[in-house]
Structures are given as structure tokens and as C-alpha cells.
Length: 321
Image (cartoon, rainbow, N blue to C red; front, side, top):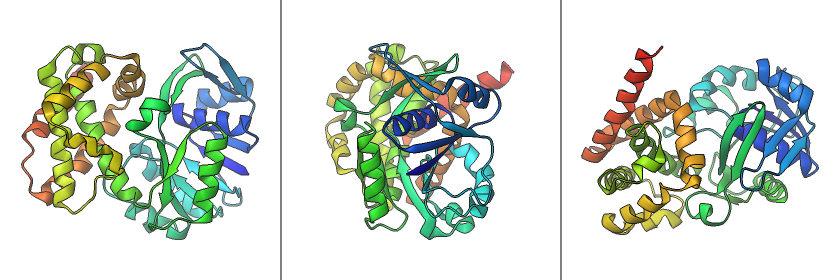
């Protein structure tokens, strides 16, 4: 397959490396220093547990021209960056564009600019951080999949051969992946979870180990997630995937479990480090979810408490500019 990874951050780098090493023909779109790093050294991944270093020499480009045709373009970036690339993607002639971007408000803005038949939706279970041109990474496997697995689906909720092909390709590359027939519900559920977790972390300057010491604040986080699910239910949006129905367990039990989880290196790598560098995106996602709250007319006292952390953190960062 001839693949373009549009975005050379942590997730884009993981995908480019793993797909390339599995035999796919991969190009990654990068700019500035990141372009130079990849051009010189390839896409370098470091497994923080084992120290294993993996290098993939991939093609790298700074632009996507209308006649640059790929079998699949994977758009891997923060929500705040998508509007700028939609005009570029709309002019390109590739048939399959896979958006792997956080959003709580659906994909109408994508479809307004790009033929909806070209649109595929996905979301990664992967992350990490870049250090000195290398990506220290994780991929959602094992217990992590109880929370999230890399997932793909069509814009219109039906399974197609191209989605099957993507899932097969990712699984062969060592990135466990599954199908979902309603990615809009999946994404809204995801945002309901990550906003409460992220805003809880902002209350502790994104130090997950400190958050884990407070049963009270972890319980508020859990209650915030439950309120988010109530919002979805009021809007007739099913919590997706169904494995997340463990959030129906009593708050006191979930808080004890999450108190343990938040005190782990897994929480540091998968939640805290991303939250610390994605404040603008978290504000964007909270604003999107607030629109759903308003439509639902559900009272959300715990989400309201957690939201304060997000904007306090924003004010603190602005003062330090």
C-alpha cells in the first residue's frame, strides 16, 4: 500500500514507523525541524520498557499536492489543526482519507469540504513523547485495551472492504485494531472521558501521581465521566464501545480502581504527558462537549468543578508567556 501519514507528531511517527517496518510504502508529511530529523535519521521509536530502538527510513515530504495520489492518507493531528488542512485535502485526488482526530461534534465540517465518500474515521490507542528527535512510545495492548483500542469505521455506519483492509494492515503492523459501526458515538464517548480525566490532571499540574493520592478528586473525576455519559444518554447517543459500561459500577469502587491506575507509569505516559502538552486541544474539546451538555439540559456539577481546573491552568500558562 502507498500510505501518507499527514502529521509527524508522536502518533504519526508511531504509525509511519510500524507500517513501514511491516512492509508498507510510507511517506510522512513533516515540516521544520521535524522534517530535517526524519530526512536525516528516519522515524526513530524507543520502547521505554525495553529500551529497544526501531528505525524506519521512510519518504518525507513537506507538502501534499493535488496530484499526489495515495491509497490511504491518515490525518493524525490535534483538533485545533484540522481546519487548516481541510482545503489541502479537498484538492487532493486520493480516494481514502482517514481522519484520526478528537472531536465531539461529528464530521459535518469535514464533509462540507471533502466528498463524504472519501472520508473514513479512526482513532489511535497509542502515545508517548518526543525526545531529541526520537519518540518514546506505547501502543494500546493487553489491559490498556479495556480502556481503548485503535478503532476504525466508515463515515456512514457500515463495514466496507477498505475498512477491513486498514484494520488488517494495522494488525499486521503490530497495532491492535478493531471496527466500530458508529464512530461518531465512539468519539463523543471518548471526549466525555478524556475531558474529565484531563481536567482532573490540570488540578495537579498534570502530575498523575499527585492526583492518585486524593480519593476525593479521583471520585470527582469518575462522577464527571458518569455525568458525561448521562449527557450522551439524554441525547440518545449510545456509550461506545459497550465495554465501557463498567462505568455503571458504583463510584466508590471505580474511584478506588482509578486511584490505583492514576498512580502508574501507564497513566503518566498515556494521560498526563499528553494532557500537559495539549491544553489548547483540551479547551477546544471541552467547548465542544459543553455544546452537547447545553443541548441535553443535564445538570453536570462535577464537570463544572473540573472545568475550572482547565481554565485556571490556561490563565496560569498565559501569565507565564
